[in-house]
Length: 163
Image 1 (spheres, rainbow, N blue to C red):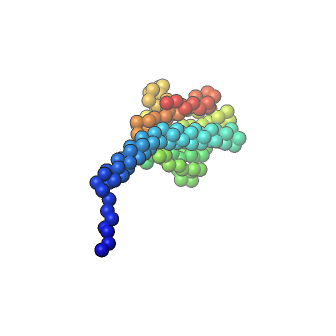
Image 2: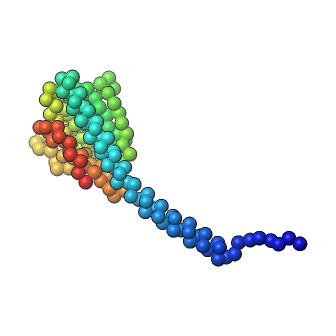
Image 3: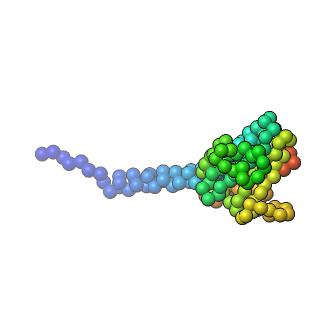
């Protein structure tokens, strides 16, 4: 007669305890991945703004970055007339997706030739009279409670990332 082998209740409890411990460590680890992801997205947008500013200065042609908060994308356009009417598929240079949510009403970042100075238009209608509201001074990315702000200084084009 053959002896049957099986697991005791104690062995099963030890395995379940080890699995619970590994799961707890994994959850804490993956929770902390959102901050680097938001920072990486902010750096990607800042790099594209820098690239576009350099392209504006070298080509002596105006450009605009149009940020679409509904689809979490931004698009880069040539802007020969410095007008919203320039935001057409014919003038499209690049479109990129963002893996974090954007908090803005509507924003276009205009970069003017030849110095590369910048300005925002941030209004529900796209037309602003007077100074920008404080919420429009930044492009804010957020995900999982972590947020990162991108600020572009108009006169110098300097880009600053803030938490």
